[in-house]
Image 1 (cartoon, rainbow, N blue to C red):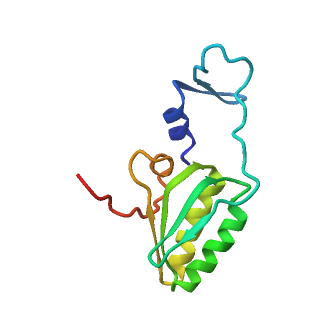
Image 2 (cartoon, helix red, strand yellow):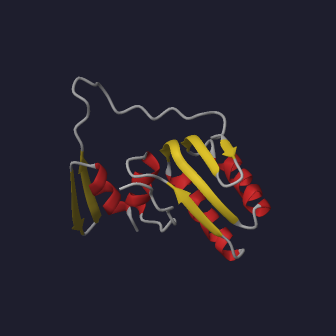
Length: 148
């Protein structure tokens, strides 16, 4: 339900043309000058994103992608259960969030709510995590930002 909004936010132009045989979508974005061929996929990390645990929060860094999400989801669920279904998750140092990472956050939020708990995410303005959460509008509760 957010596809067109994401396309428009990331592309220079988006054209949608409904037709008898289906809908045609044209997206345009200028690639870096002099670069040959299609863009290369982002490298994925073989190990899961580290979760750094303190008394008051869990801080993630690195990529929240398809290779990291399964192990990370298990770890976050264990930590949430140990904390009474309450978690403050700091995403300040996350460098990439794929759709599977967004899904992980939504599922964690929903599981904690069902258990009577709460998820609060730290994603300051200007970070990758904040940009992704703002674009997807999935309703992840954000911690208030300090400062002006």
